[in-house]
Length: 495
Ligand SMILES: NC(=O)C1=CN([C@@H]2O[C@H](COP(=O)(O)OP(=O)(O)OC[C@H]3O[C@@H](n4cnc5c(N)ncnc54)[C@H](OP(=O)(O)O)[C@@H]3O)[C@@H](O)[C@H]2O)[C@H](O)CC1
Ligand SMILES: [K+]
Image 1 (cartoon, rainbow, N blue to C red):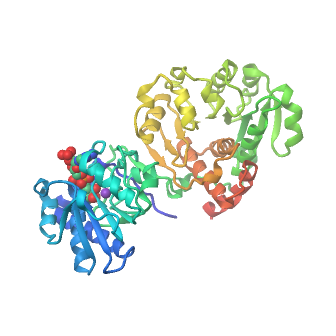
Image 2: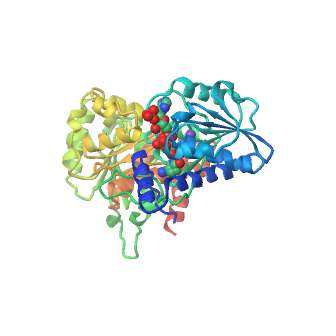
Image 3: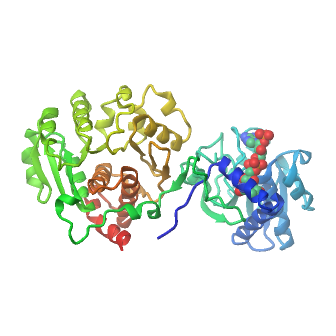
């Protein structure tokens, strides 16, 4: 099973850098190793004799570029270095690296971008602190306009290391070589798209040991949660594996609940029941076999069903309708203190009323699964939750605000817990962008919680399993396929 991968912030990288130096490795040795890593990836992209243009910035990212330039020149590459700052502005290790470069230095304006066989982007890395302007901006415009292969040092310049956002504009790299660890900006969009193929070079810095007091962000990997996956044992009986209740929409909107219900059954919930409004009983009954069916008329009907404590995981939202009755159902479900998954209409029914969700979900394991649009509608009027440029930060704040695990969906789904833990998912596939995909995810997560998997781990595992199931099918995927693709994914995880 792959190991856990921490994604350090720029600040955590600086601290890890400092710790390595304090432990006896001079900063310039780190820079030299970084430069060597850049040079070796460059060598895998172009052969000796090729024209390499290294574009260096004013800081240590630029310093890495100077080291790489020297090494490549020693290895018979034709190297030109374009400097996006005055040479006397260079400080510390970067200045030392520049002293080691005896080749040509040209201002950005005069650099031969279009004739380069490879461009090395050493403008900015984790020190990017504001939107780009001036020579730096010009350099990036010319890099992107050149159409030449681009290797980015640490990060594509212009991409924020912590948020993955573009600070004005950013280098579109074919490959990126980063140091010690990937950063959130390599996994979050659009940073992931600008980074191209990312490789991690070990330069002797341990960036995987966050202090206990620090906010830690991880890449979503089975190593994080496979130990918490439900594993039925010989004595298991169906009630031990939980009972998931999925609320259905009206007669013409019943498919979402059945998609969720089937997924909950497939992921291992011992029993699954669809709670259906009377006018949809016939429609649901015609489609259900192992999934059971109960009539449920409004909040009172749900309250009556929940007198049976064996219903220990609930799915509310898909196709319930955006109105007060849905809010009332959510209130009944919340008061019942069962594991709860809220999605779609159960979220957008609270548009402008998010304050009703403030600290509302501390009493029972709860997972909210909005996509960006639902998130923005739900938290309208809460700039403190909507404004942070980082998707990580928005998800973390909303989790802390509501007391629920927050799954902020997308190709870079973020899963955040109220205690600050966060995970970025990266095995998504564009084929999951199909009607009903989200409903299926609801069932997977709720079905895992029905089997007593903690909410955060169930959300991380559910997102990963959902994406892996979709990716295993590929083109032509429709949501009806997804539930039946779960067993293969599960058997790989459980064996
Ligand atoms: N620990 C490691 O992983 C190692 C990383 N290395 C490399 O070091 C960089 C980080 O270097 P740093 O000097 O901190 O920052 P940058 O090189 O990314 O940025 C340089 C300076 O640029 C200025 N700045 C910031 N934003 C802008 C902007 N939009 N326009 C113009 N200038 C900007 C800023 O200085 P100011 O004083 O102007 O604010 C930055 O300090 C890391 O990415 C790695 O490549 C080490 O080489 C090895 C160990
Ligand atoms: K860079």
